[in-house]
Length: 337
Image (tube, rainbow, N blue to C red; front, side, top):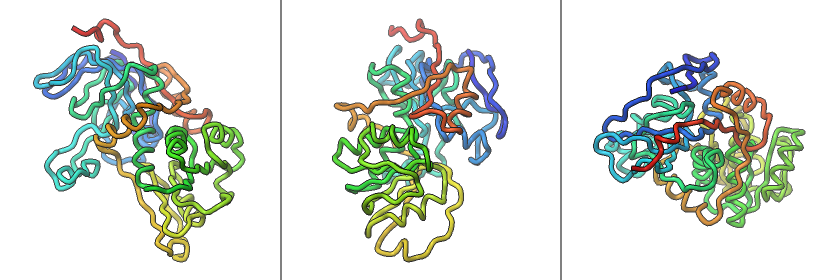
């Protein structure tokens, strides 16, 4: 099988050949159809995330078919479509796992980070942490839902019932959650890089009621702000635009340092929160929430061997929406027995 391998931080991915893996207890062997390219993969390549297991195969927005079942696996069948998200394993018995907060498990392992990822023709995943996926839409349109969609959904839930919602950084997560928020009757205010008229027009086409640069004030105070861009300087900017009682939700796994700001900007029961990963319950709730009205996914598709180019285009903001690797798997391995 072919896979794109990252040997260490600061290095380009390389195309390599490996034997097809064999599923062990509780594991699924998956023939990958598509894998999203996430900004987290850029942070990993840039050495901004600790505790990676090198060398590694990145990718945690995996759409695949079940090609084999390890011992003890129940509830799955060969050929079934499956999704693999960021959270790949937890201990199940710590105080976080037993209180519905498995995303905070200190022993957790993550797909494409400590566990095999989806920049490959085949991968392994713990069956207990996989999500059943519908047969439609096409794999490249489902892939962004498995991180951009899920993390965006958790961030939106942290905003509570905020009716006036600011979204900073209009990339993969923002373009999905804007649609969901608008469908819930919220007013969305999209903040992009200053002067990025294309992203502002894109946000308006998805239902945002206003779009402007991150250096511009919205036309009215916000009830909450979701920050998807990894720029700490956006936090005090967003705080200044919050109404009393409002919340800033930082939704990235990595962010540059937050500069100092006057306490007066926080006063009035405003708050700052972070999103840390996701839970399996988040996945179930998100796919149920979009079952009747799936969001439109805008994707730029690359072949597997162009993963480096996909990452660099993501870094430059060269496209709207999400980047996805389309992987040519072995169709015969997907056939249900």
